[in-house]
Amino acid sequence: MKNAAIAQVFQDMADLLELKEDNPFKIRAYQRAAHTIDDLPVELGQVMEEGRLREIPGIGEAIAKKITELLATGHLEAYEKLRSQFPEGISSLMAIHGVGPKTLMRLYKELGISTVDDLEQAIVEGQVAALYRLGDKTAENILRHIQRLRRQDMRVPLGEALPVVEEILAQLNEVADVRNLIPAGSLRRFKETIGDVDIMGTADDPEGVLQAFVQLPQVEEVLVKGTTKASVIVEAGLQVDLRMVEHDSFGSLLQYFTGSKDHNIALRDRAVRQGLSLSEYGITVLKSGEIEKFATEEAFYRRIGLEYIPPELREGRNEIEEAEKRALPKLIEVSDIKGDFHVHTEWSDGHDSVEAMATAARARGYQYLAITDHSVGRGIAHGLSEERLRQQVAEVREVNQRLDGFRLFAGIEVDVRADGTLDYPDEVLSELDIVVAAVHSAMGQDSEKMTGRIIRALENPNVHILAHPTCRLLGIREPVDVDLEEVFRAAARTNTALEINAMPDRLDLKDIHVLRARELGVKLVMGTDAHSVGSLDLMRFGVGVARRGWCQPEHILNTRPAGEVEAFLKQGKGGHV
Ligand code: DGT
Ligand code: CA
Ligand code: CA
Image 1 (cartoon, rainbow, N blue to C red):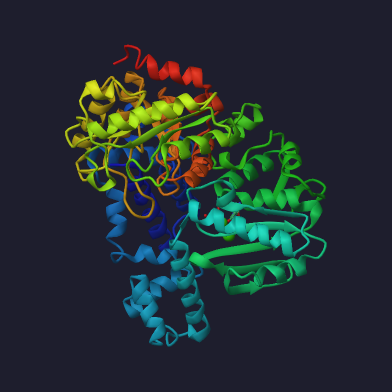
Image 2 (tube, helix red, strand yellow; image 1 turned 60 degrees about the vertical axis):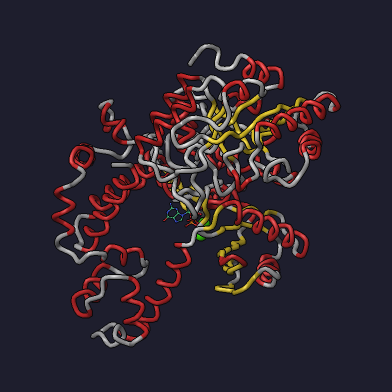
């Protein structure tokens, strides 16, 4: 059983126990376990094998036992028993906020409702309002919560949300007089998908800023507009909240609304032990009742004895312990990047020439660029035949000659066929500066086949990098079924680098994979997979993933100078295969 499935079991159990109005501590423990497991960098099967289940924060003895039972048998007796007391599907109703367990149970018993769709229909038909002591108002309220839930279900990829938000910030800065304007929430933490956008601001005339905000051309619907907060829906159905706050408490508010919730809860527990109480308004000294305000986040973290924690690390892992020891990583930044290892040109399915891509990369301040078009197997992407590959290599070498102080690597993104062999013979691959291997076909293979196939490619001495290792497309295609733990071990053993693909709909590897891969000593590289000059800009999304994976510059090959990169590519795998 994979982590996601196990997490779902605990989430369901928490929901059902809530319906039963069971012990709230037990419910919270299951919720916390579900969160932790879903966000764990390593599969629980692996952790169990190493006998380390209890080392995971939030996993006590009772939960560890349940995990062990699930892993061993694929079932959990306590869960089955609990489930048998309720109709199938009822826990989906728990996701509607504002409807308590008592009401849900009544809706089920009196109207037979066990799905969100049923409930919506019953409200529209007036059945819910007709229930004794429920009435129109409650029914309307529930309907609003259902609509809200539907909207929340539609999480927007960061790559779509960020440009929209940046445009809003730029316009608002222009038309209104603001002092601070910073997006908080998941967007600031660079999470791969965004539920809603939470912008925090300060200004001398906050109401004027809110007025300007709701009048921006992007706004399609105004949900709320008050004197300190407004909520709107913009294009793509994205909800954007703007909160205007006092200058002198901006730091605490920004901190609070940046989250994550798990990070904030852990901070609050820590503060209580220090005789302090946290709220969005500041820190209250419990003894005196005095409230301290903070204009900056740095001052806020300092007050509770921590070094500043970058937003990408605020996920409730072990950032607080490390911040206390002053041992947080010096995270990689976009400005550390010296080159890109994965781009396409008009030779395959890209839009720009080799020279245009190289010139643009140099103009960004890069020292090197790898040209990696598709191999022949990718018919639809105009993959290169051996003949055309040779012509392209000649062109790449020629352009390289002309570009002073810039290194252009001749490479390929070679297809890994269904059996793990590559699209070109080794003699052809060994003539290239860089070989990036990738799966693009037969993605439905079972885990054993897919894992074997990928490892076979990693074992090829000519392959330097495995691109987008799980092949997922956010919101479009699930990751392939592959044992990543085995892939990471094979990559480390063969000294093959794994890619963090920076395309916002890929972000593959993702944050928790990066954490685990690094633990196992895997080399990591970044590639934008750019199909045009403009897409070289996508690098920042890859850097975001690396930062969420706690990477310092030295963990990512793209921060190394050209000479060092050349050495890695030339010495090949240095006899590691
Ligand atoms: P999202 O919008 O689902 O992508 O995720 P976030 O992290 O932006 O969450 P959101 O918009 O619900 O709330 C923004 C931040 O506000 C969140 O990261 C932490 C803080 N926050 C919200 N609700 C709670 C809460 O119940 N307790 C605590 N401690 N903090 C909260
Ligand atoms: Ca949010
Ligand atoms: Ca929000």
